[in-house]
Each structure stands twice: as C-alpha cells, then as structure tokens.
Image 1 (cartoon, rainbow, N blue to C red):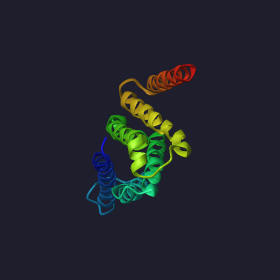
Image 2 (cartoon, one colour):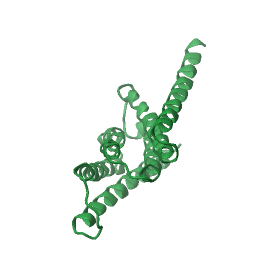
Image 3 (cartoon, rainbow, N blue to C red):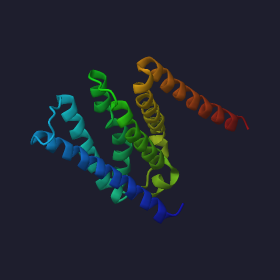
Length: 183
C-alpha cells in the first residue's frame, strides 16, 4: 500500500473520530438545552465526555500522522467503550445493543487498520512495545458480537457466542503461530 493511500486511510479514521466526537457533543448539548426530552444519567454524561474528548484527540493526532496520535488512537478507541459498556450493564434498554454494535465494529476495523505495518511505519511506531494491543481488536469484535446478539437471544447466549468467537479466533491465531515457528 502506498504512503498516500495509508495517509488517506488514517485521515478517514481521524474524520470518523471527529464525527463521533461531534455527535457526542451535539447529543449532550441537545439534552442539556432541553431539545431532547430525556434525562441523562451521570454515567451517560461521562461516556459522552469520553467519546468527545477522545475523538478530538484522535482526530488531531491522526490527521497529522503523529506518533502520539497513533498511540492515543490505539489506546483510546477501545477504552472509549468502557463507560458505555458500564452504562449498558447498569441500565439496558431494548435495542441498545443492536444500535451500538455497528459502531463498535467500525472502531474494531479502525483499530485493526491502525495496527497494520503501513500505518505504524507512517507514524514511526515500533511494534514491539505495542503488539499486545492487537487484543483490543478481538475484544471489540467480541463486544460487537455480544451487543448484536444480546437483544435477540439474551445475556447468556450472547456471552457464549462472544466467548466462543474469541476462543476460536484466538485458537486459530495461536495454531497459525505455532505452525510458523515449527517450520
């Protein structure tokens, strides 16, 4: 992949982060001024602040392909989902999982692209220190599966599906690595 293409993809991820940040800020503002007739719980407000600030940080760093932007992105993309997941665990509304799952999936794809060699090279990142973060992709994919399945079949079956996905993909990755080292 060319440097120009890699830079374009990083900027697309940066724009996605900016869009999520603006949407979170707009939702928060509309609820505070009373346009949206709903009261937000403190965890929801905290979640929207996290999404807004992390999205702005990711945008600023990735747009310029800065090493700190890459590091911020791979740390904050998965971490930005923690308050939302905690909020959903505290009070869950039907359909919330189906609405959230596509966004988690998009973030998993963004994180997967950021960890690729071309993106790391463009941002001057050595992979040795950051290699454990590849698990963030699988965690986000499992979360997306859990949220997508939750509304249809319930908590237990959704947890089993997400864990099975995680074990199968991790097992396949481990077996592939073992075969590569055995040769």
